[in-house]
Length: 109
Image 1 (cartoon, rainbow, N blue to C red):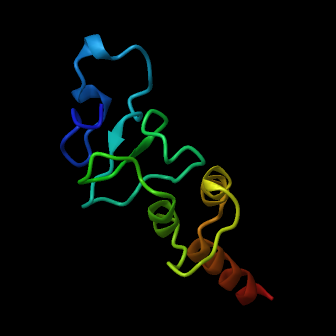
Image 2 (tube, one colour; image 1 turned 90 degrees about the horizontal axis):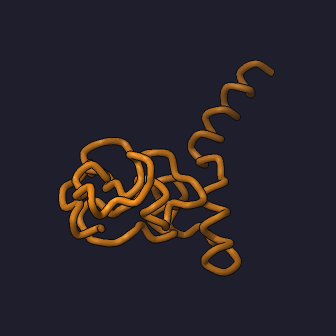
């Protein structure tokens, strides 16, 4: 499926109808490298679940790429197996968002 969706920002609508058994329009979608990324969820490593195909390469995002999109520093350490790490990243509040919220709360105190 990933090979069929060759261009950034494209989705399941590019796939011939006879190859689609079910799914939402956001599944099997390629990220657009010129646009903001979509929300990272716990399923971001599964192309059938949401828009998580690498913008250039024919593969899903890696956990580290998902963490970068969530604004985690590259040296941030996650613990557990791949599935547990993916869940941590997908369930996280992006650090930059958390910082912005904390700064606003601090302004009110």
